[in-house]
Length: 235
Ligand SMILES: N[C@@H](CCC(=O)N[C@@H](CS)C(=O)NCC(=O)O)C(=O)O
Image 1: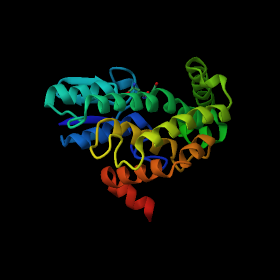
Image 2 (image 1 turned 135 degrees about the vertical axis):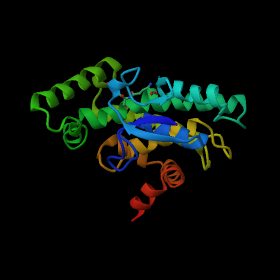
Image 3 (image 1 turned 180 degrees about the vertical axis):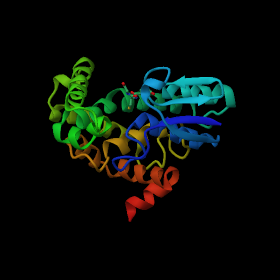
Image 4 (image 1 turned 45 degrees about the vertical axis):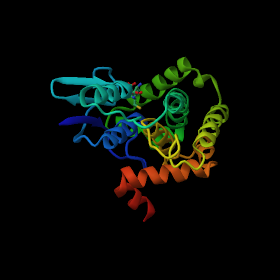
């Protein structure tokens, strides 16, 4: 059986990593049997999560995991989509994962109060210097990526443009490509859910909350793929 690395539900979302949420949703879409295990990113082939173990193979990176599902099990998550809809899916996926993702990272890791009540728990029990080093290391990563050179408000402004584009493309959906769900829906759902995570106050969260159709989509996808969490959130 396929085993997926996860951190487990946290901060009001199915996983702190949007990439893990994406891959788990894609596994659910595929209908293949899988289970989850808590592994550290360093245990994966790319030093990041998600990764899967499938028999003798260990595959890292959500895109290559999806390829593995396609090549090994014949699962095409975009079945029924036109070439244009597939291209739109890839475009939105890249926007969510290579743009919006970094705004989420910024809001969680570079805003002191959010770091203290959020990611710092990954270093619970470690000496304070270790937590501080992690805070500073992420600051350097964000500086290299580029968002670290901007204020939080500027980052939220940039992310807000991506949310507005996603909201426009989604419309009333129900899915990104209209009536038919595609693989990129996992990515859009994961990014919206992560940005809207109730645990963190930030202008990035405010920016996604401005789009009721994205939030309704998040709720529909949550009810479909994580019904238990959706019920708990509604309670
Ligand atoms: N391109 C990768 C990105 C995965 C990723 O960035 N994972 C983060 C968690 S959200 C991670 O494992 N970071 C650990 C690190 O960079 O050390 C994918 O699509 O799977």
